[in-house]
Length: 546
Image (cartoon, rainbow, N blue to C red):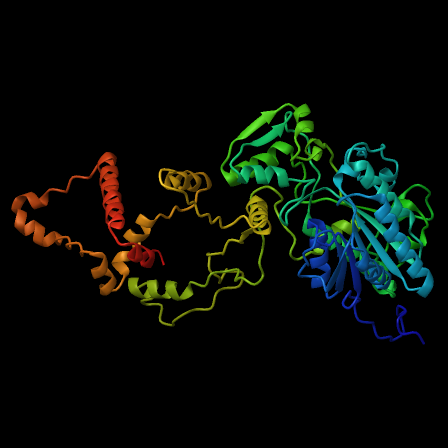
């Protein structure tokens, strides 16, 4: 008897272990791109064997092996790895090329026809291919996969991406080659993306004002990059699971066979309905947008970036966006969408998902933290000190039923996510923090003045030879101090001795120095340190710098 089929009442069959992707072979196209890196790391963390094709010469740390795209010697190995893969991930918006996507799909189709093994192809698209051409239904009704198939033809940079989507969707062969197109909103997080907010963040980091095009009230469909990876993981697991009867279908937005043109968005778990049983392109598209950041407008995102980098906002006409080479036309997108059920469930189940979008950090309950701060010992100490327990005659009494025996002090949930977390990831992924720069130049080139201006612009510390001498020379050993002619400063007299010496005048408070006096004193000390440093021999200067 097959132990993998669902148990019926009265029968005792062991339930198989939950399906995982551990050990599956994954091939990632454009593995060294930002989207490819997010997908590759997510599948690597799920225990998969990740390989891929890269556009550059540098290897990636999360992939077991990669191959150069335009290198003839790697072509055979690339095709062999692609044919052996269980899951193929294609970032469609990275250098969109229908010929490259077609070649990848044909290689996977040939391998599936030879060995009969089930495979999955997941194409990750861009908001430029769907958000502008798909019309929301309105009245709070969700946009469905059928609406995506009937979208207005896309023009501009999103046309090639839309063409590659159709190639992936039409390659679907139920039971043998499962193909999905993940259509995310404007991607953000994980260092930012070219068709997202990378240009805005980089310009703000450089100190420029954050632009807002038009009135800035257009609603942007947003999706964190980690959510896209979670959706891809869920799609791959659902497609490769050989025992779907033991799990709720993870792709519920399939066409209902009993109702033409409608979607079965809430299938009953008792009747597994897997979309591969329905030969329709409409079940191949999966929308993925953030559910906790509805109504994020262009100006709200720009204001969050400007606030994190302490730069101003500046408004431009909407037509001027076409003249910018750094910014994406997606900034003028106006679309409000809801995720497909599969995407919504995958995002909610993602334990490490980003929260708060581009807004403020949000409070998230952490079960690892104590919910109540125990201050009973402090209360007992206070009662003993004030004598509140005198005459009670019996120590601590048990609390009455229904009475709160806990402490009124509750720990506030920690705040996570939001724009600060997004900007931190942007700085880390792009190696922009910390900023370390050496400014050198010939005499009369004023390198110190240039260094001071750079330090002020980027809010970092400025170190000069004089400041290093002033800070470190008092901490050196006596031999170095004697060699440099350092004289210990006289200790300031204690207040009691000074009061005794001055008599009645000591009772008066010392006069506070004005800002001008403090500035003059600081300039005098700096000048003295520079003159002292200039008088040292060259070997002494080298010792101090080292």
